[in-house]
Image (cartoon, rainbow, N blue to C red; front, side):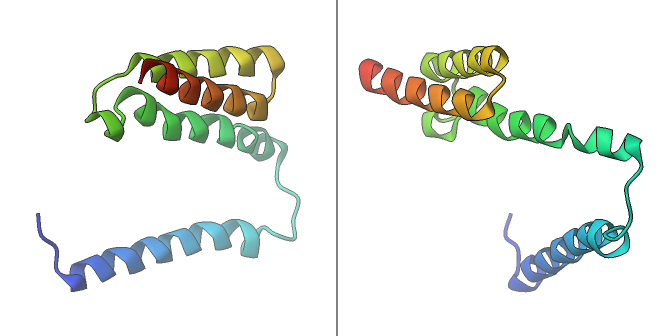
Amino acid sequence: MNYSMTEIWIVILALGAGTFVIRISFLGILGDRALPVWVLRHLRYTAVGILPAMVTPLVLWPQATGGQMEAGRIAAAMLALAIGLWSKSAIWAIVVGMATLWGLGWLLG
């Protein structure tokens, strides 16, 4: 589908305005007040919800393989999950997952 430059800029401006409204609602309006406990409790899980949503498509349908699943990526994701659960550290999970992905990519070609 071909979009005109006008349509592309309308989408860009609309998305920019939308993210501005979301940010100003927290920073500008609520920035000088304490948030309720129930809001803070839910905000703690933001990264837990967003990181898997960003990584899962890259593991299950990677563009590098034309959308086909690859054993090395699945193994790296499973090992990263296991290390993350064991160590309770997202940094170690990422490091081990990437090392596994690169190592298996090198070994399996």
